[in-house]
Amino acid sequence: MSNSLAIAATTTTLRSLLFQGTRDELGSGSVTTRPLDKARGSNDGNQINLFLYHTAESSAWRNMDMPQQSKAGETSPFPLALELYYLVTAYGENDNDIQSHRLLGQAMSVLHDRAVLNSADIELATRPNEIDSPLFSSDLHRQIERIRIALLKLSFDEMSQIWRPFQAQYRISAAYQASIVLIESGLPVKTPLPVLRRGSEDRGAIAVAELPPSLLEIALANRKPSAELGDTLVIRGDRLNGENMTVRFRSVLSDSEIELVPDLDLTANEIRVSLPDASDATPWISGIYTVAVKVRRANLNWTTNDLPLALAPTVTNIEPSTAPRGDFTLTLTCAPAVRSTQRVTLLWGDREILADSMTPLSFRITNAQPGEYVIRLRVDRVDSIPVNFAERPLQFASNQKVRIL
Image 1 (tube, rainbow, N blue to C red):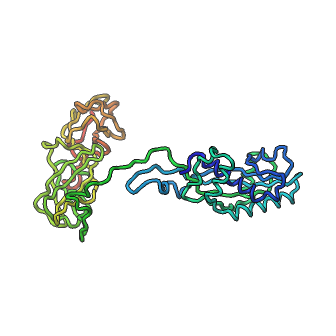
Image 2: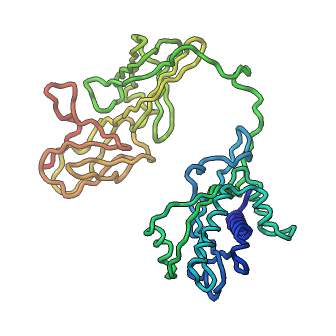
Image 3: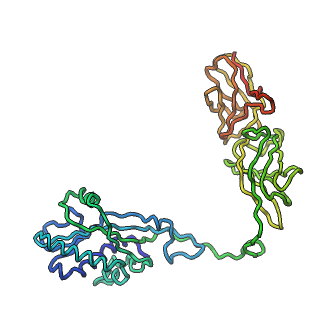
């Protein structure tokens, strides 16, 4: 496939086509490939200038494999797919405008008739007389996808924007797009070994004429915003009946998994699972979890979709609960216990205070003013619950209050 020489090979092919197609009209003139400010120079004969003024990556080919480059199952690097933009400008002998218009019309006719570059044109242009021509090694003539030439409809303002940076005298010109030019990536293709077995017992894919089990919601007692250790979760969904059922909890940050067996009072649309209390909280951490149900039905193992669940830390003790105004250190214990890898802060009034120490969990309170403060412990973006939802009317939890005298 084509390599980094493909741009130069495309330009050379277009110049060759223009020269061959306008030879009679050019006479002793030439076809050049110069920037606009240097195109004319000291030349006063017939001249056609082909200027590559812009390159752009093709969005249509951005994530496509190189044609015939990789086989099924292989991962090949995407090619660099380019669209090339050219400006064709004609100059008449002794700056004769009529002659320049004749040349421009002839050049546009040639590109119209050769709207698709074939491999023979590219091969002839890149290897005119030399067997080892550098541009011939671009392999552009071997590209499966053909290069198409299209006339662009640019307004006068758009055309002027191309000429303006070169500070050259404006000449009537025609703009063209050449696409697509594929440059092969230099990265290696990843080729996996053939598959020896297609799943368990080499049975391949299995088709089942029924819908999988799915989850709809997780309900908490008293409509609490987050779960706490010791809570019972009500998980609702569809087709949850089966054998060997377990509820999987996967921590978002640590990627650890915990599986619990649901309570006995379950139906096809609702199951209940009880979280362990604080005395059995060793594998648990506060934070965000995803919850899924694993069940065996019709001799197949199913795993439902995941639903999010926030597990809040429960504050079990605060020392001191009463302190004088000013600066002091507040020490907390909570369940689950915090870990050194977690981000832990204390919400004190309108301040968020980073933990001063993790063992024991303590916070340095500065300039505390008299009053009663309801504090919250924030662990990995989940706050402890400062409200006692079991009471009516709702009351702030007494275990999360600190009085400053």
